[in-house]
Image 1 (cartoon, rainbow, N blue to C red):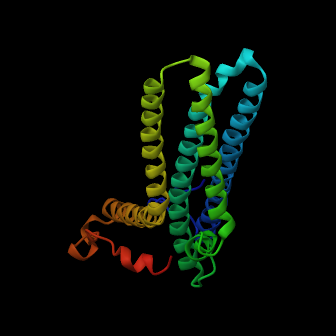
Image 2 (spheres, rainbow, N blue to C red):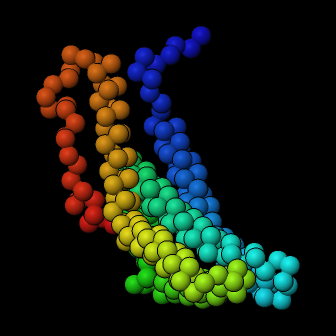
Image 3 (tube, rainbow, N blue to C red):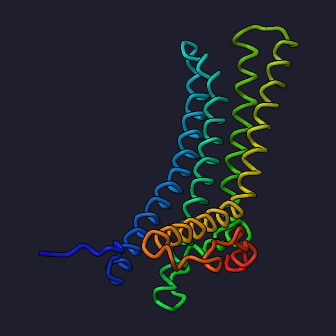
Length: 235
């Protein structure tokens, strides 16, 4: 007959293997999320181009050209959403890597902490050019769709101009938001890593209170603020 561990603790090897498996699963999630960026890029671009070509030569479905701006904005939204999700997941993975390195007493798990910045535009121009290409396609197709709108609906010049300006304002809002999100993803990754460690320490403290309440003193209290600058140096 087995006796349950009152402290609900697992053997060190089991805990280490569980962390490894969690790291693998989270890493696969990142790969899946970042892979959807290319799917969003390809889907919105290809569908918009094909729609424009068909609408140009087939009058029966020419009005479908009006959905091109919506498709392109949807592509921007999905790319922005996936990039932010990736940053959060990579911050969480960096926290797991901290734990694994602590267990091994060696700095071996470094992929999300040290090497991911090598994929940014400073070191990887293809990444930068892909977004530039998307925005060129975005601009060309949107201009085409509004020119087509003018001929299809036979609306006045002023109404067409108002609609075009309104759409430009909306598109700029989403584009600027997208650019800001991209620029702040590094900070979000660090914040996600801080949350991981802060929550981990709170859980450890809570378990200590439950098992040995008499041992709790002021020295055990969780610090109110975690030094993010120290974490930034490891990015």
